[in-house]
Length: 269
Image (cartoon, rainbow, N blue to C red):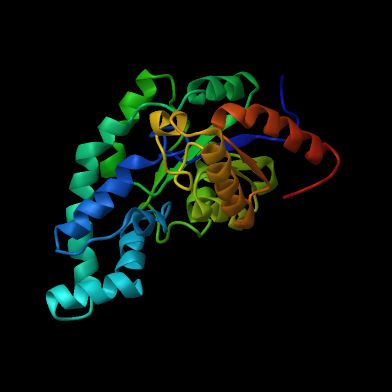
């Protein structure tokens, strides 16, 4: 199948194409804050996921509970220098662990191959820095996934939820208009990135940050537990504005057919 209206799909990385459950960054945020004597919960660590990592740390450190704990431990409210200090610990820790979470999510390589065969370009944006992505890229390529571009946190003056990384992707791929592009992401801020760029936005629920479990943990859930967590994840991504929500990227081709049909009828995101 070929597409007349759609031109490209832009994927996030962790939780969308690799790292089922987006486990790598979550654990590293906890370790980075613990280095400074401050404990953060899994839910707190996951809250701003998808942002550039320094922005993520800044958001966390100013949460009232975490800011209060920081002040109790260090005798002062956290400031910009403290954000930089946590970030300087975070980045090498994330570089260290990212390769342990480099497995492609089932169906990711097949979906990418399907899109290429249909003539679509494949872009990618991420809240990771280039330093973190460097060891991940070749491992993903070995498994069959190598997008046409990569835009990282820190490449531009602002990251998600601004559309700047998407705009850079349009230039890299030579594609336009924004309405002919689909953004696929497992985070609410990543969905916002696509919406702010004027694109179709597809949320990924079961393999990503909102659901928060790896494949084995997901398989171990009872039917009722799975459905309850799925409903929560779908609800969050839908409320974030996603035009469609899917379990994983393996389900994307059918959604792209729906979007192509909508565009043929004159509909726009």
